[in-house]
Length: 90
Image (tube, rainbow, N blue to C red; front, side):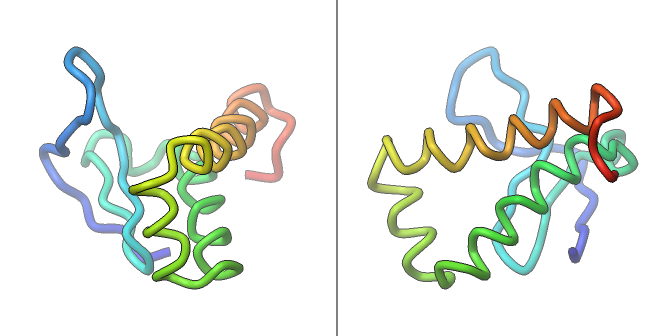
């Protein structure tokens, strides 16, 4: 994981804070969240998904297929909750 710490990230929804964005092989993350194991675990899921599917296929589907986006985000958030609840390997 190649972390790039930033002071701001865009959000697709009003009133929603984006803590990190993965554009493989980079993870752009808010500076204050860079040590958050749960968020890093979520983003690692996306890196793994990109590696499995290929960069172009993953991001094309992520951008244009809302069901696909929801499904990969669900996996990321499930992993994030595991780590937050102490059930993950970190």
